[in-house]
Length: 350
Image 1: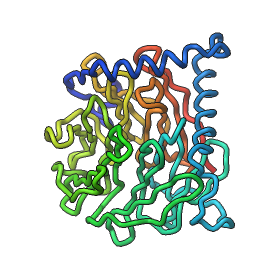
Image 2 (image 1 turned 60 degrees about the horizontal axis):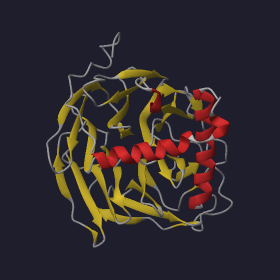
Image 3 (image 1 turned 30 degrees about the vertical axis):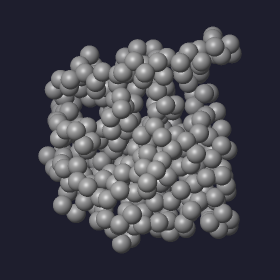
């Protein structure tokens, strides 16, 4: 990143993350299907992307049935996001869905234009993170007893919050590993390191350490790419670090922040998003051909959340809490080359 080294330090070269041929085939097949839409042929990129993103959000909400939650009081009035607490975005079904925590610890979800609805009864401490495993959304958060808790949404209902134990000190990070029963959650433990629990068809495994030393109040973010789970964190020195879970230790990737980063995928690469120490949003495509962090504007009081709109797709969405206490989103289309085409920040709440 040029021109603001005081706030976000430039990244050293990061070794290229090569995609396997199977992954590349998925990217091409999904994007090629999008290209056959005749109504989009003459639309400018920004118009096409905004229409597709909005349609995806609305369709996704209907697909996973978040409009009504059987464990939530129907009369509950929507609450605004808590100050400084990071929002999260999960791609459920066919599009992204926003989740945020209110000041009283309840968790809420909404589309770009619809009213917020409460996810489930129960309260969390701080921000939540989630994943979609092909049939349901699974949300994770720090409970008031500082253990890790989760709730699942399927059809028209959400489950009650259930404990996974442990001692959590910040926002967790969740990752789907390509199979309905195979996913994982990562969290900052009491010793400042990253701890994880893996889920398989046999159920939940035990907590195990992934190492690292995270900045106080920040948590890990994770994504699955090329058959590997990747974890991005903010270190105690405010630098960003990346690791292949279970394979390597954390390696510096430049940048500087005091918030939880976000990690997802772009075509053929990992894509990181973070709020710099100046409050501005930055992105990084982790390839040697595009080193360093670059500004995507905005001004935020929280960390960022991010997701790929479709598995292997060329479109990402990023969310963050603005200085006016509204959640903002920005979409990016990576199909037109690098840097990606950004829509610009737009409010989702109130």
